[in-house]
Image (cartoon, rainbow, N blue to C red; front, side, top):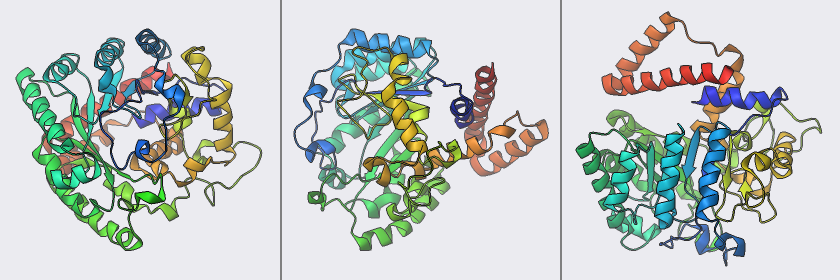
Length: 407
């Protein structure tokens, strides 16, 4: 859907501020695990406001506000485990799906029940992402938590069984892994694990280094040098077995991350805001995050107790409000906050594709039929019938959404 997102983002450049494409919500900051790679393990006491969770009624009304603003994608995740508020999550999913949004649930997978999964399948939830950091219990649990691997794999098996029983292709199952010194050598084995467990997409992310004391997880210089070879091997295997992934985003080393436009990340450009094709990150125009306390943020790497909050403002007021407006202006001037200077998301394939769509936005008319035939034949050769059919349906949905967005 990047072409449609690009259309929406470009309206800002035409002095027509547009609504968010995606809304990420974090219903709770509580978690049933204490993983070694999590900020919770290293950043000291949790900020007091995050423990004061928004009531269920406000979360449900937020979904209504999002639908009224034409938000297209609801992502339920956060700094805690969302399924600890399982009834709320279920009701938010139901309300969002009834409003026509795509809905994505991110979870560590250890608390889901069969009833939970049955309900999500019945709602036709679009995506579930579970966190697994190794293809074996030995590797995963050394990073995550004791017995986390067995608990998550059990839920994956339940989901696959229930989807077959309901004859449902959704929710699409994804796995998120964080690459560390303990698992960087088994990326190819993670591909095999995903294929063997019905996973449709593998998302691999670089480790956020919250403390030097995380040295057991941080890649050494030698390990960083060896990583590209491990990634290439995993990419070859993923291509051979047809597993979608973002492994190529790991090939951009942290020291090389300069993003679009700026000669050096964080270099202040001119006082005049630059075009979007020169902005380091597009996330603050694409969507926003609402934390358990109601405070908003431009992405999931931020929390600021001084930010605007939906406790006393509407979704529309915070989206167009002073806090996010100031943040966007900072990015357009090249004034990157500290977390942005080392963040690898702008180097991901997802972000690069969106940036490319912005550059190509002037030529985003519907492809000619001859172009379609050529693309269809190439897709069949590269991906086979089933994947090509899915890609065609996605493309058709993009065309429809583009027409709707331009009306």
